[in-house]
Length: 238
Image (tube, rainbow, N blue to C red):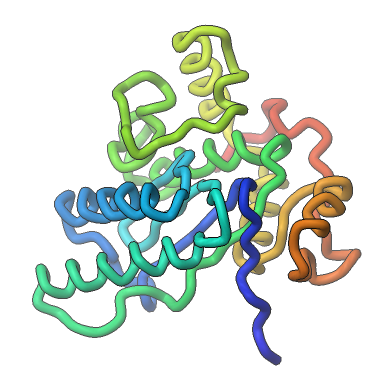
């Protein structure tokens, strides 16, 4: 069965995952991590992709982005190819680095964006790389809690709505991350991203159908349910 084209809808938030081939590390030190972020920022400006959040783990990276047009795949291709050339040259290796194509989903931002951001921030905690999200350098978390300015990051409008002052927004976001991500939302985000399907309620999917000819879900029964109160603190991540 021929695989569907990747779902890209300009002006909407996309969650992306790019993994190392066979689970191998894609970063060997901080110089590698800095180079990858430089390429993400450089090509983001070139292709009109706004990066809202990111996390770099040893063998994968995750991003939350909004493309201005349909160039998202070309942006990822440019970043991926240049990083592989850099990585292979620096470490004296050859061959592929990535596990095929990146995985992605289009999100209903109102229901899922802030939780998706928190989920990225908590990946290093779950992975045992730090005790608290604020202790990990290689994510956008520090930017959102006021620990520093990350010029790669473009905050989404929903982040600005968390408070009327920088301090209020930073505190509200830190509290959201500390509250954890509901297990139901974790499963929905993971399933949609791995499957390449849109993630949102019925009305969101109806609006999205007007913007793309690509199928949005595996079937009516498989469409993710609406999250009635996605921002209310629930069961924490473990």
